[in-house]
Amino acid sequence: MPTLIYVHDPMCSWCWGFAPVLDRLVAALPEDVVVGRLLGGLAPDSDLPMPDTTREYVQRQWRRIQAEIPGTKFNFDFWTHCAPRRSTYPACRAVIAARRQGAEFDHRMTRAIQRAYYLEARNPSDPETLVALARGMGIDADMFARDLVSREVDQAMGEEIAAARAMGVGGFPSLVLEAGAMRCAIPVDYTDHRPMLAEIARLCD
Image 1: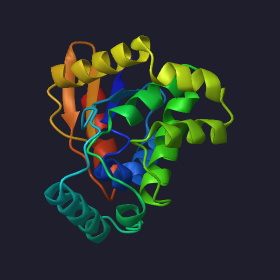
Image 2: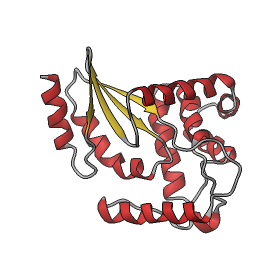
Image 3: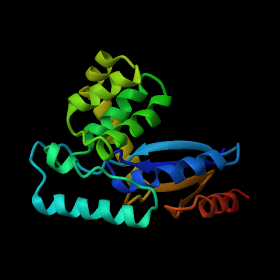
């Protein structure tokens, strides 16, 4: 069966902007197209404060996304209420740790992280934020906390990052359609799902 693979990072601001259109695309896919999700891993573990130049760059990206993708919101209180670090791997592990308690929690944890980061000015680089999100979703928070720092989850994240790189993915979000021996990148449209849907239908025809 054809598989549409969504490659993302839960702390990628462009993935946040793409989220509503992705939902519409997934809802409109033909029944024979399976959706897969891969964590691409944007920024490795770090305890260092985010440099001023990076802080300024990320905030510029937030403003650009708000301007280019109608309806996208960001809470800039994050930059004064939190201690930002350039570290998205903890959030990636959180998605995998949640997924271990049910496949549906992959998507749910991703969206919970995005809402916490972009709307609620909470820092998903901090383990305590991630555990609180898990508890709020009703999954076993103690199991989640153990899995979050486990070798198995870290290894699974590394395998997903390697798989994304093997596909030639160079940025997030990315969409890759696999059907038999065919593997094609689907150009991401941040405002309209229909061009992506048409391209997928053409390739599957």
